[in-house]
Length: 168
Image (tube, rainbow, N blue to C red; front, side):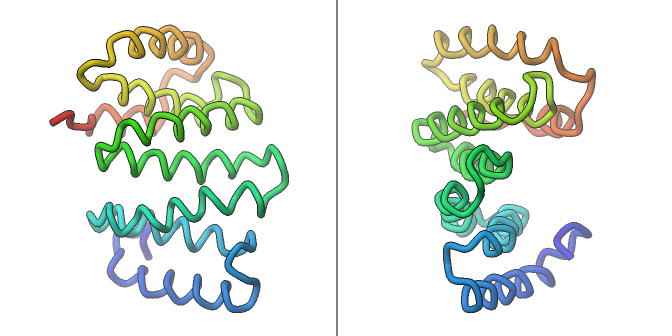
């Protein structure tokens, strides 16, 4: 339902799913990760960034313990948490989280993979912030190297260009 734009209808089902899976498997079981993460995404879609953050943080914290080492979804959950911090303009907190996600994703996929490129693009956006010129130059060099190995167009690239983060 959240994928079809019916977030209001989908969110109660995600809450119920998370509740049931936590009761059956325990709070930190891998089967709780997807409903927890999707609940965070649903809250973002609804415009409730503060409400999304705890779910995304929990998914990012639980994933490294619940999934096998090096599993690419660990990086995805960490990236989701970092992206929410970025949307909340909590740049100092977002940076190390996104750098961790980039390093983890880079262990699973080649530099040109769209998942690696997407995280690099988030970091590039982060460094557009005032006072981050040196970091921006560094990430632009890294981003150019990553981008040169990527397909010419990605969905994430189109979305990021359509809605660049505000620096106000």
